[in-house]
Length: 151
Length: 82
Image (cartoon, rainbow over all chains, first blue to last red; front, side, top):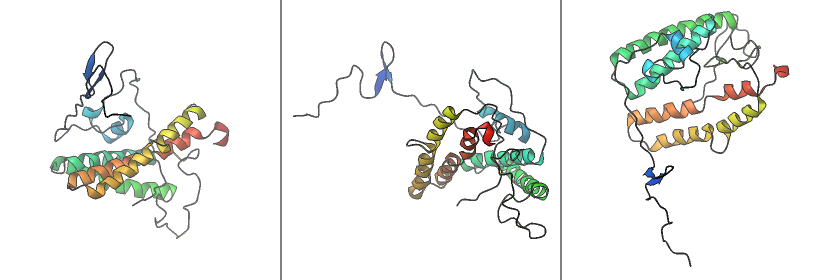
């Protein structure tokens, strides 16, 4: 009959094996992001993958080359939306940071303007966007996964 | 809850298509232990979360986890189908 005898292990319940000896299973180390963090410009943020230099920790083996972005209405809108997204995430855990909030609203405003500019040039971004003559252009190619739909 | 915008969040430029890698990525996304399942868990855990900041945090994480389909889509298509 099976008993509740613990499984024989050289290490205790809270530890695991390294080559050679036992060690605690994990040591999580998660520092809080400070208030008023330094920010990249929105274009640099999009190319780097984060708005905050403090969170830019590339893999050691990664090539330091930044992603190139075109100088298009879409790339500009992506950069603005990315900055809004990043600041939105930051504000969830730092809702009292007035400086970040001001920056957030200024980017939201610019993104609104960028969205209007993009729609005028390339068509609706939302199905509900009002078009100039009421034409239904939502189904027009290219979609974002099509050739040319991403620039 | 869900609003579709007809643009990518992030520019993608795939130089070489790789269906084998795409299969791995897509199972990480929608597979048994994938992002999609995790996303729904975060979004459900919100309902019993008493702290406002953490309601916001679970919403943020659940949303982020569920919005990366574009990457899989692009990686799967072969050069001839694009």
